[in-house]
Length: 463
Ligand SMILES: Cc1cc2nc3c(=O)[nH]c(=O)nc-3n(C[C@H](O)[C@H](O)[C@H](O)COP(=O)(O)OP(=O)(O)OC[C@H]3O[C@@H](n4cnc5c(N)ncnc54)[C@H](O)[C@@H]3O)c2cc1C
Image 1 (cartoon, protein in one colour):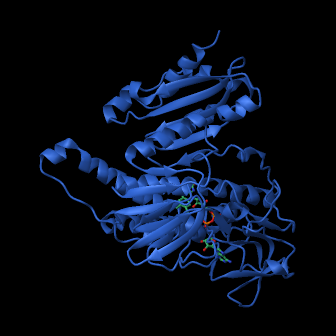
Image 2: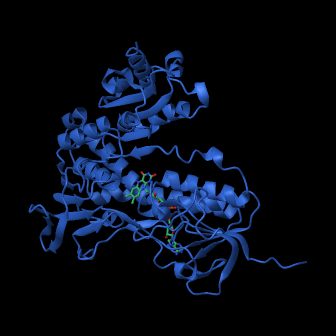
């Protein structure tokens, strides 16, 4: 019998959603696959210090605070102030369940996990913690990202955090400053404000979350301010100084903000600096990100990269799809059906935000004759029953063909609601039509009914 040229057909570095997507796609189609993971458990930043813990904490905060604000409980004399420690308690159990479930995927598909830090030796081999190299025909880099840390900020100070360390916070501060108003900064601003903390949100740009539809930006800005978040736009950091009793943020505009703690949430860097890239032709940019083509191939064709390490959109949802797409390309399968350009946005603020497709700004700039249909949550029976009346669904559609061009939503469960519109929007040709929502019977009372209300509202504008 002839000896195989490589130890594995595929070797994946990193077990976050990107790595898992690629590893499972290839393992399920008969390839011999192995993965490497530096962290003590699999699942990636997504499971251990990003998506899962932040969303679990958010759920604990919103459900507890909503219950505590219930007038009936107050009348019964039930008042309490939960500690951060109590609110975080459930998170570890959820992480544990995620790890167990994901570990079973690797076990069932006979994918060995090499524990340790992988570095490239050459384009077909990696060494784990300096051990004897492991070889593979194809490799996928799915090493994720970490918060960008500027020089001059003391991240070892007990009061200065970034998005990877903020969940270690054990005492609830009275005030905090969040520097950076991207998705992570805005989500944490909303979450900590719900907990009663005085939040200052410092935005380096002129608007919050500029990639969203303008009306949604206005809505989230209004609601954050209404909840008591102080937002300052167009500000740049001059210095951050940790003191015994707080952190002083000196801004270039001359303003000074002093709060109990500071959360740095301004940008992320790809995890490539200790990956042995100097042994390959692959070069990372100044943010540690690797450039790939539409098949997620780097300049070295047998080396792919997926997920946060290739930059935007830096979402767990996208990383998983990219991993699968890379896997399909490696397998020689068609990958055009993965709709890689149809990635929705889900932002877990209060109210929640979600959107897919074009914004009004983009359609106006492209001179597309579109119309808008809107449904206010306050006019839906379901929202009135649940008391979650803040929010709106907005459908953008072509005024001549009725093709759906964008769906934008904010309010409770927006990240679920948006997928109904997305499912119609991706239908081929004339099947992508607003009339679907006018001609379809929706359960009543539901939030999905917002689609019929919005579609009728839009159609009524046509002449
Ligand atoms: C606070 C926060 C909230 C978020 N919320 C959401 C959300 O609600 N929805 C959403 O879709 N996304 C969210 N994200 C983004 C999401 O977590 C990331 O996009 C996702 O984790 C990226 O997946 P990945 O596979 O590229 O990398 P990761 O999940 O980071 O996994 C990379 C893995 O590679 C390992 N690794 C790195 N280098 C090596 C090496 N040399 N050898 C071996 N192993 C290595 C790491 O230890 C890690 O386990 C959030 C992120 C943060 C920080």
